[in-house]
Image (cartoon, rainbow, N blue to C red):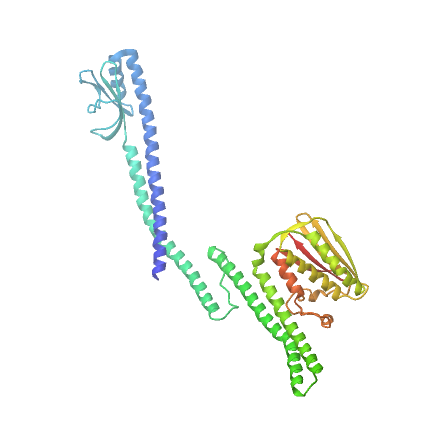
Length: 435
């Protein structure tokens, strides 16, 4: 057994034994105190009775009463005259001072006695055998000492068992962590069925590892998507420049090739700009600049700006926006979100499409929707279209890089909302739920 296990066992035994000692001492003191109080209460009652006898019949009556009672009573007595002479009873040796004293006689090594001063200067002593209390205390001590042996046995066994169990879990976590550090990112920390504190910690760490794994997969997927999507414009750029070098051209010919090259470079830069934009949004740094934004006014302004675009393409844009709805957010990003959602609805739907922009308060939530009666998106693709660079086949002929909905999802998440793609029957309804 290692040093750590030994230390844990010692700590456990010490705590266990300290608790037992504290309980034992408390029981001992409380029991003796209770028995003493009961005994003293009986002595006081007897002393009051004898004092009343003295008041009624005088010193002679008190001597007679003590003489009669002492033979068969449970109490023992003592009576001393004003000159210090012994008058009655077995308690002859005491300190003439009112109150409680512990005395002894030949057959009673411990007597609890109450001394009362009499008006004539004498002393009345009433006592009771205290050996029962003494015996009870000794019995408690013996039981306590016997219990310590059992406590030590259980403490040692329990301490080593708990320390061994604890260190076994730590060892399993260590092995799993070393495997993860070694590159096995799919490995997870073991979780027992009991779900103690270490298991709860392991569950949280596993969730964290799942999140990290998802992020790494996402980074890898994004890297692959970037390479795939940038390959086409870069290849076209290379082909155009190669053609320009392959044969002499007129000034107009060179200008045409340069213009085409700049167009491809702009596409590449636009893609990187969108990716940087998503990274900035997902970092949460923009949250520090949140301020009140009149969302109703913002959406009306965006709708007015895009209504002519929709009309040129033979589509109609309708609005149903509740007035004066204010939220705390980033106005620039919310404007971009509104433009992205409406532009998607305008660009990816056929002529005669009806597009509805709505904003309503539902209790503590705000529901912002962009719905159309176009072809919609099949259920199987709705989760994919918010991924970076993912584009449906019917959208590949339209301008774009497949990052619009990714930016929209990042903006919604920054504002602690949810982005939902629902069936509009027919068409698609994109819903942003805030709050």
